[in-house]
Image (tube, rainbow, N blue to C red):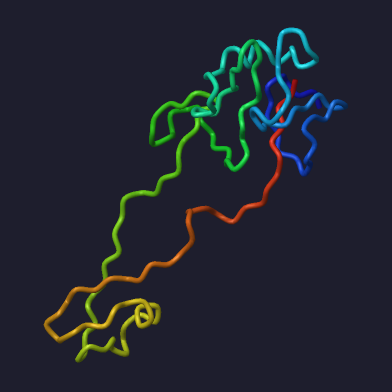
Length: 163
């Protein structure tokens, strides 16, 4: 199968460049420079169209002097961007979307019985709520849990772009 220039593929590899398949790792300024005059020149037009200065703020190609560098895709999930289905509206190819979670709250009935959780309360509630100081105190909160980010189960692969 012939891949068009600019195709991004995840591979179970760690090489910065796979010359036999004309693939360049998407590791930003840590990778190889793309210029009009080197072996990666086939990517030049695409890189020049989607470059954004010395940062990778929007997931575009880096621009540094006369060179361009691949987008730094380490730590990102790919999400389809065309077709208008994104809640944030149209996003150009390579445009980053920062982490977020939908606004929500957690409410539950106060199962108070002299400061104790009643037997018919959900199992998870008994260990998570703070005890009441009196029968009239109805303020409850669930305890904090979780890590430092929200993410699905995942596996690390290296993204490569076809040159």
